[in-house]
Length: 167
Image (tube, rainbow, N blue to C red; front, top):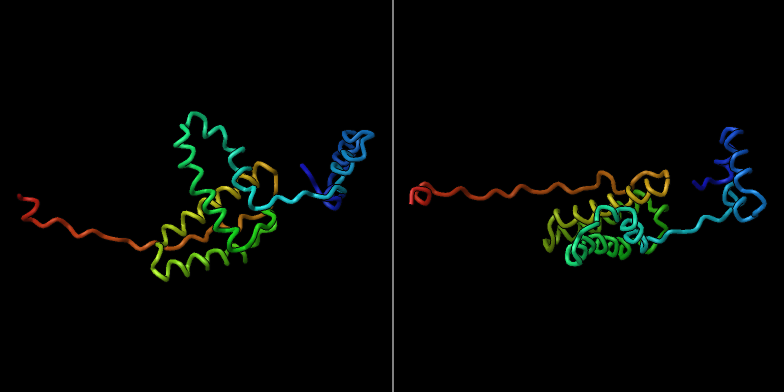
């Protein structure tokens, strides 16, 4: 797992020596193992692709139509987020940006064009994708989308009349 040079310096001596021995004479490998390499950015536009790779085992045996239906809401939620905060590095998404996205959804819910359920779907998909990608990549940052769901109104159906039941 990539660590910054400051994080490598905090490791036990045995771990640092293991990284040095593993690096060997290759400067590029040594830079990566000792935290001197530039960490590549991972734009938000790649979130779905990374997520799909990590959950490929769960998609095994799905038909093309099932895969399309599985992918559509996840790619839509990612596109929506990019429209609000831009195609930023996944690891730099802040709680403030997540709240900005939630606010964008709240405006749409308040206008009556969409329901809280629609916003919650986007928040849930983004939260799950971020959590999975961070876990699988070994990144240690909090999930900015955790706990941002909207309260959904209970919609009760009117009961059947006694006459209707009897008939």
